[in-house]
Structure formats: C-alpha cells, structure tokens
Length: 330
Image (cartoon, rainbow, N blue to C red; front, side, top):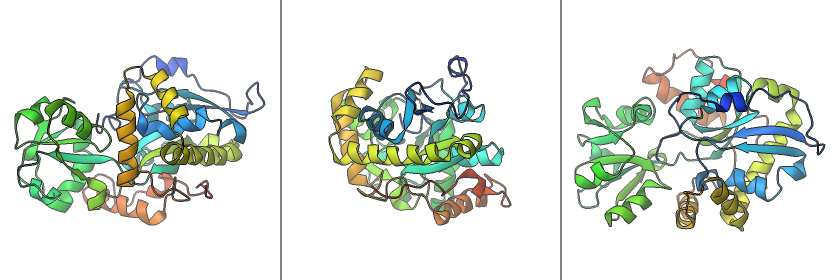
C-alpha cells in the first residue's frame, strides 16, 4: 500500500538467512554473485528488476543475481548497512538521505523512478482540484509519511498537523467520509478504491506539483562499489534495460516471475499499474532517461528537507549518492 516502503521496520529472521556474503567471489557460473533485496512483495512497481532477471539481462552482463523479496518485516537499509545484501531497492529519497545522516556506508547508484508514485486521493465531488484545495481537510497518513512527504506539503501549502488522521492501509475510512483525503501510490490505491467503492477518485501525484523525491533507487554498500565497480555498472545497465523492456516491450517474463513470487498478486493489478507508470511518466522516458539522477535534483530535495529541520543544513548530503554508474543509454 502507498508509502509502506518508507517505514523502518523490525528486522526479522531474514538477516540470518542473508548473512554477509564475501565480496569478489564469483558464482559457480563464473558470474559475479549479487543479492538483491526489494522493498516490498513482488508487484509491478518492481517489474524492472524482475524483468531483468527473467530475461537474462543480469546474466548476460556477468551477474548471478539472487532476488530476495521484500515485505513488512524486511528492512532494506539495515540489510545494506550490515552487508547482508549487495544491492537493495530504496523506496524514496528520505531513505537514502537518512542513511547519509547516520553516515552509513551506502550510496544510491541509480534512480529507476524519476517521479515518486506518491499521491493524495480525494472524493470526486468535493471541489478539490489541486493539492492546495486540501488545506484544512482531514488526511489519512501513515506514521512514516508524517516524517517524509508531509514535511513538503506543510512547507509548500501550509498544511497543519491537526489535519492528520491515522492511516491503517484500508480504504474503508476514506470511502465512509467524503471529506477525507487519503495517501496512496498512483499505481495501486486509486485502482483498488475504484473496484471497492465503485467511484473514480480524484488523484494528485505529488511529483507533478513539484515534489522532488526520486523512488526505486538502487542502493549499494560502499564496500561493494569499491571492490566491484564493473558489477555495479553492469547491475545499473541491466536494470535499466529491464525497466525499458517491462514498460515498453513484452512484460510477460517479468509478470510471470512476479506472480510466482507473490501468488496474491493478480494480472489486472499488474496491467493497470504498468499503464499508470507509463501515463504518469514515473519511470521516465523510453530511453536514456531511465535510471538517471542529477546533483541539482538532489540539492533541491535536500534544501526542502533541511529547511524544515529534517536534516542539519550543514550535512554532507552528497554522501547519499554517486553519479559514477548512471546508465549510458538503452
């Protein structure tokens, strides 16, 4: 559900199962072994990674990637910081910047969603035509959201904390009260609300109003980057190719892998999520835009967050990322 990926959740038995692997050790195939931890259960929002694995994009670039499915008990930042995995999916820019604040030796090497899929959802008949119109309205938010995109909303639109209501990842409170606004992901909650509530909600993508966060970033420990720069570059290039294929080519291999990993997923949900990623431009244009990051964009994000006291203004935010391995083009 929307913004579920930001929460810093208790690390469970997966840490033991994913004990730190020796670096620079080739897989039996002769390829470089890499453990990839995703930030949630298998879904279209992770389609590029599944597609790259299923279509052999990783293998043909000399990588033997093992995908470890995320979920509510998987803490990707902690897995990375402890060396339990070689690469992890970072849900949003706050996760990466939080790691930099703690001086954790982890960097973002690519951003596979140029727009954070975060949306606010309103009833269609309430005169809400923009995010600004939500000022004073009750808004259902998770605890994690309050320390993340809510900071930006307060700064830009003057929203106040007395608007916040507890979001429990159910659409029932939203459907029961037309005044209520709900958080979500563009690719999931609006579709589920349409199916469950038989209404077409008004949906507002924060990124289209200037929210500067990246999403679906590839994060790597600095130790892995230093010892395996060729593998780091290969992973970024393969994943970019996977996203291009998943969104603009034949998505069947990726979908089959997703449905195998997550039997609760359905094909209709995958299809509509893929269409939303294309129509909103979430992953970026079909070409060299996939996976890109810029210093200017990171500086903009840091300024918004630090101006609101989330991070010290003198923090070295550039330690959060590197532009060394950006895709060269597809």
